[in-house]
Image (tube, rainbow, N blue to C red):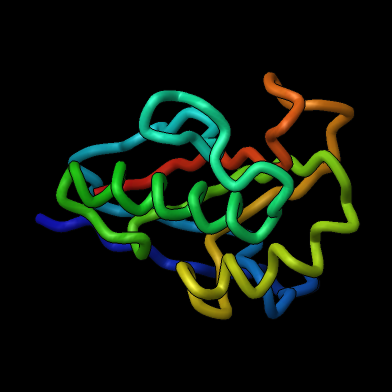
Amino acid sequence: MAATIERYCANGVYDPPGYSQAIRVNGAQTVLFLAGQVAYTQDGGTSHRGDFKGQAREVFRAIKALVEAQGGTLANVVKINTYLTDIRYRADLLPVREEFFGKKLPASTLVQVAALAQPDWLIEVEAIAVI
């Protein structure tokens, strides 16, 4: 039985156009918990140094690859947490996320942090997927 994933919002709770307030999963066989993804080069360095959009695309490409490696698609991602080193990157983030997830994202959180583990990283995203 394949998992069914339903995005929903309760009456009286604002339903934003850019993400889902809640996700209900039934019949999941596998739950994937993805560590925070950053823009790595093949040898573990920082890719797209100083290029926020490039780093964001690399982050979402990695999430896509990790989910697909287990037989899912980005439609199976039910939750993302996004960490930015500068909240002003939000305007650049939205169109890149839409390239991968479309207009209605999974349940999500977006916060600014003082720093990430490496000073050249501008974005980190962790995800949960059900397959």
